[in-house]
Image (cartoon, rainbow, N blue to C red; front, side):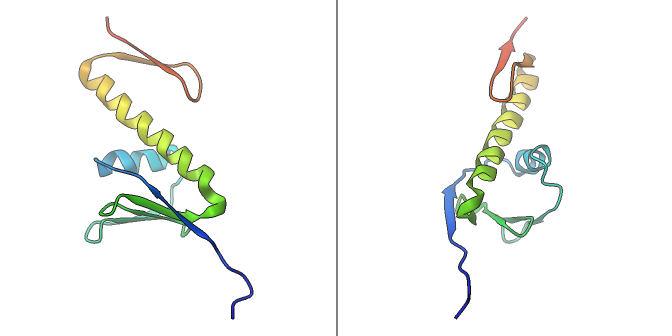
Length: 103
């Protein structure tokens, strides 16, 4: 019988674009990750598993903060790309706020 247990949690995370996800991982500071194209799985720092087929992230329950950081960075990457395509100017006001302007 093991002397410790790791409780895992699974969070829904719908990724529509893998390139956005990989860029968000780098922005969040995750420089060590492995992307398995065939299995559609991303392994991050041996603690986070992102299953792209089933749209969820699996992490130890103590690492929920890192999932939230990744979700925020993913959203930032998506919004920045859309703003660029629409020729809007994006200004970051603080960590969680931004402003889009069209001139």
